Length: 202
Image (cartoon, rainbow, N blue to C red; front, side):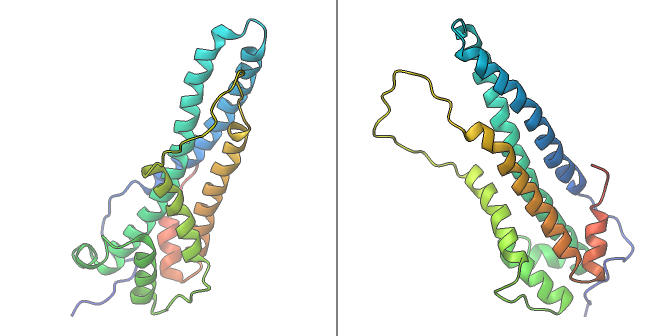
């Protein structure tokens, strides 16, 4: 019978884990830059002759939303890439694909730790809620909800404060991703080596 294999075994693996992690951080940097542009544009829109700037503002606002969504998606992709790499490396691709690949992220995490680390995560563990938050943000983005407003009459344009809050929301997603890597690495030498495989300059 085949055994669970060490993370340091000889072999070669493909994946885009480094790209996803770096892309999340880069998207946040670009989000901050675009936020400054949006803030300035909004002032021009609010000026007496600001009408011509409104189209440009909404175009940049679309870019802003795409960056925010992309960063959160990349966070989830990076974490799932870590779990998939860890599982394939330690269990072999054939076994992993047959038994774990299509499981939910939470089930995948808990089974990988049980099988590979011989440890059962308690309900009070920190990794599962972290992963649930990360994948929850992704699920909200890929399953968008529609909302109906009963009172939409207005005689003036209001921006609201959500564009100002968006960079902090994205930073929270990235912080959760990095904390997941940190906590996963603390499980064992094998998990630490898997996370280190994901390390690269941002």
